[in-house]
Image 1 (cartoon, rainbow, N blue to C red):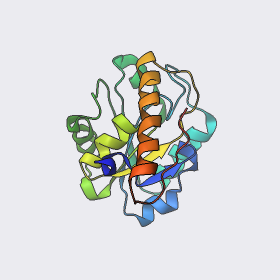
Image 2 (image 1 turned 45 degrees about the horizontal axis):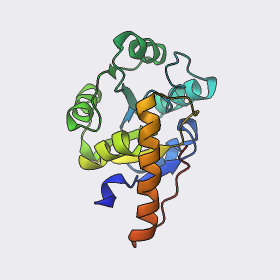
Image 3 (image 1 turned 120 degrees about the horizontal axis):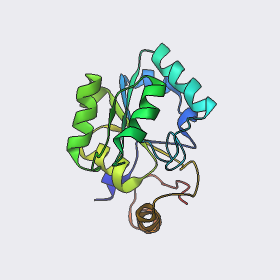
Image 4 (image 1 turned 180 degrees about the vertical axis):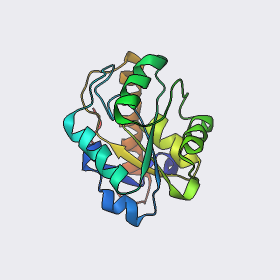
Length: 176
């Protein structure tokens, strides 16, 4: 049961994910969460380091798309258009439909797609259920939707349970 919540990889932030490692793993497409992964929650601004990272992944031949549970099409569209990538909004992650929609936009499959996000119960669970490569990043900041704050408490409990009741490798993301 816990394996569905264990990311393939952890990184302190989106722009600290090694592009070389993605290429070595055969990753050709990235499904990336928006809020607190690419931008601060409910913000339209993409930081310069994140924008530069997107230029580098494109140069490496890796495609990306935003897959967000955000209900506001316009907000997701503005960020995606600034980066020149497609998007899915109202994704209802962790449901598989959202991830399959992202793979369809990218033209990738289960073996060459990675999911990047800041939440275990949406991004990591959804990606793992489909057998995708999953990367958990530390949230950009503490400001977030009230429902997400509640889920963060559940994530802390889950991480504690995973540490104490599994024999698998240690898992210790920084969860706010």
